[in-house]
Length: 127
Image (cartoon, rainbow, N blue to C red):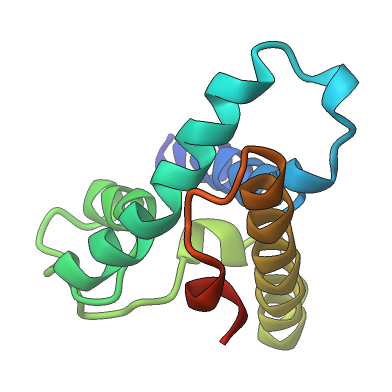
């Protein structure tokens, strides 16, 4: 039972990661309420690293999965996203996915920031 929950949450976690990485690249005519979503997207940008910091380097989603699998799990013990890792054949593929996704995320942030008129000052993004 826990495996199915882990796989489901892991699949949603990966889907969210991919969406976050490519959102800015999606042509605007395919997204309803684009201005609103753009602002939410940029607000989430600083919130994620803050949550990772507060959770001792762990993603909240991964922590929930680990806690479901092991009720004695202590926050920050292992920062690997095991719920996502189960979908990759090896750890190198997982890290490649995270690295490429992170580069796309940075590019998407720049695109969205430009699209809505530079909420984040350019010197914070480009230096």
